[in-house]
Length: 94
Image (tube, rainbow, N blue to C red; front, side, top):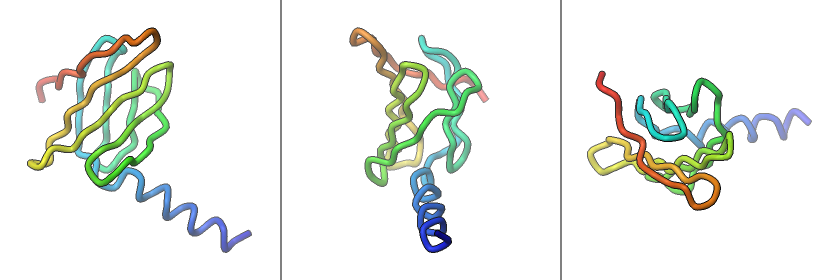
C-alpha cells in the first residue's frame, strides 16, 4: 500500500506544476488559479487535468475551464457549460 501512495502523490503534484497565478471573472463566476495550482471557481476547488505542458482543463460546478499557457507564460482561460454555453474569463486588474 505504501508503494502505491507515493507515486500517486507525485502524479497529482505534476498535474498543476506550470500553472501561472490568475484572477478573473466570466459568466460562471470568479476564477482564481494559484501559482502552480489548484483552480477555484467561486471559491470552490475544481478537479484539474493536465492535457499537455501548455494546456489544462478544470472541471466542476457544471463548467469546464480550459487553461492555455501562452509562450510568454500568461494564461488564456475560457469556459464551457451546459447547452453549449461558452465564453472567455477576463483577467481582473491586479
